Image (cartoon, rainbow, N blue to C red; front, side, top):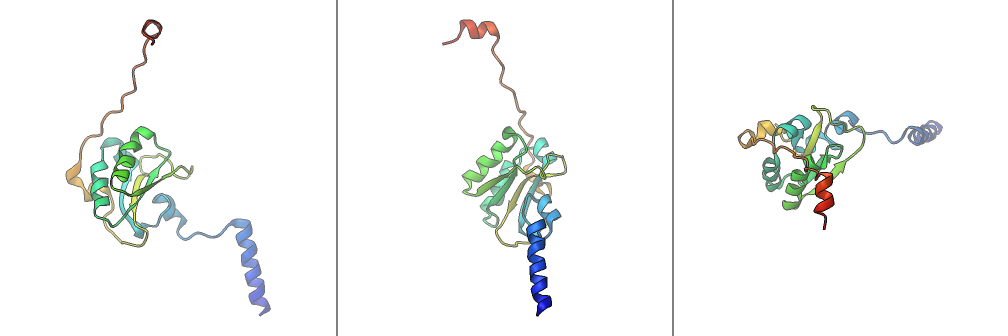
Length: 156
């Protein structure tokens, strides 16, 4: 009995010092904070930059299996805007993950569609599931700044 109390007290102290232990922390970092068995669709940063996959996201959300969208908030708003719009149109909730552990390296995840419970879908990569929907990404144009003279003489 004394060992059990000591063990419980020791565990409580360990949790207070080091935090509550997580299950599969590497897996959660890879899939933007969720488990692999809950994931329905993934779009990597490299895939996001080379093509627009918002139609694939809409189709996946229409299936009704996964209705949680996790977005890598460390990417620019221009890159994430079509995916946020698609999630809102399909009545799915989305979460921007801005923790520094979610980097913008090409192999990292940019968009993850997940369910609240385990669904065990395979494959989850967007290029494998929706190869027929490959459309080139729209180039992001920066707005042209008016010159000093245009601002001076054409201001309202």
